[in-house]
Amino acid sequence: MSEGAQSERNDGKAAAVAPAPVDPWRGFRGICAATLILEVIVVLLAIPVLSYFGRGPSWVFGLYIGGLTVALILGAGLQRRSWAMKYNVTLQVLMVAGFVFHWTLGVMGVVFLLVWAFIIRVRTIVAQRFAEGTLTSQHG
Image 1 (cartoon, helix red, strand yellow):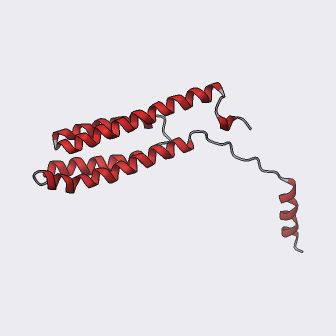
Image 2 (cartoon, helix red, strand yellow; image 1 turned 30 degrees about the vertical axis):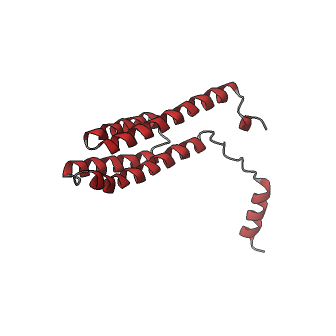
Image 3 (cartoon, helix red, strand yellow; image 1 turned 90 degrees about the horizontal axis):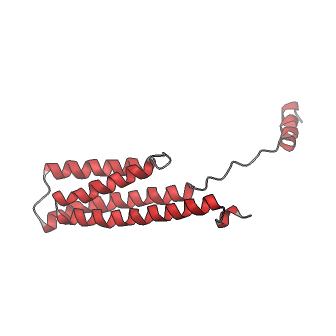
């Protein structure tokens, strides 16, 4: 056996690697990112709906939908940032502002605003229970 192979085997036995600490908010950030991606799909589906219910989309509407779509996709990747929740709520306000283009966009904005209000409420409850040490994952 070569000297390098034996030293690797000995080092593997001697060195114990400590596991990385578990991030308690990882799953929550995943839910937020998934909600934003779902919102992207719904926003893009607004284009044919608006064409069916009203006049065809204008270039201003196209810019609005395009910008909103890009902002939502970027938001899905920014969930680790401390300001991510403020960004998410700002996006919802922009969705509600879609009433300017068509009532269907505004309704979608209100629906997603309610979804984000629920997400924020759940986040508040989990943060409170985490601070108290009463989460199930904290025992064991």
